[in-house]
Length: 310
Ligand SMILES: Nc1ncnc2c1ncn2[C@@H]1O[C@H](COP(=O)(O)OP(=O)(O)OP(=O)(O)O)[C@@H](O)[C@H]1O
Ligand SMILES: [Mg+2]
Picture 1: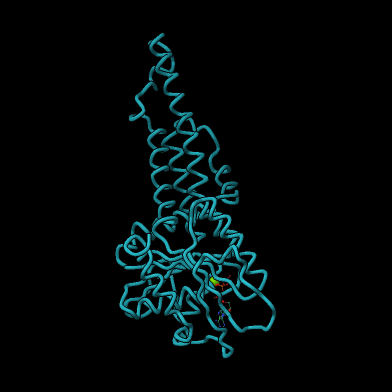
Picture 2: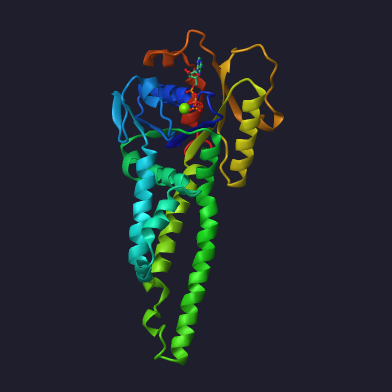
């Protein structure tokens, strides 16, 4: 069994509904489950009929849930970056960091990093108390960006690490020629260099997250019987394929919602598909989630992962 499950897909296809129903079914089968919503526009609490917070709230025996406070994680990430800049680079004191960080709050990538560090926190500090963590995700665009972030950032960090090695080598050469030179004081071994050390620890954190997404997670794509959500599922498959994150399951939700013609693209044929009927009466109470047919999906999830299929 994998220790994490992610439900991805186009807006409105049923990611929150299926995450909630899947988490509930697993919990009632005896697993200890945490369902975490990463969507800035939360409604997991509405689905479970409980007020949720940024920390785990008990929903019922074996089942806790939380809604990540993304704005708080953005502030925390910026604050950490500010402290780190100040301690790592002494000359940064001469720069106006406040206006720099004001801009960074809205710069591309900030929200994705905030989601990553929130996932890292759940993984490192909370997951040990559970058998499974289920992630309800935001619509595709943001999800694909944060899932790709570890792989992309690691390329950057690898280049920066090489650059830092070259700088340290140059300092050593200069100091050897002229021990009185201005760089002599900052001529240190790689292992004693703060910047080199920081790059190494960022690499480790990013690799752990990449590993979490690509090896320790059951990644399910939710779609509806319509062309648009099939196209989106294909896009997700293609983008995740580039960063070595395999899809474990396809959840075809809202079956029977319309009589319109549709078909599952043959490029998705290799992925196990699970059907979920559209409930015309709607889903109002937590117990209504029991009408969502999660048995086959739960069975596939339990058989997945390092101990089941590879
Ligand atoms: N199988 C189903 N039968 C009936 N209604 C459903 C079913 N699945 C989802 N719905 C309804 O469809 C709507 C959207 O579902 P949900 O909020 O789970 O989608 P989502 O993918 O999480 O959306 P968002 O992208 O906005 O987060 C909700 O009103 C939900 O109750
Ligand atoms: Mg949702």
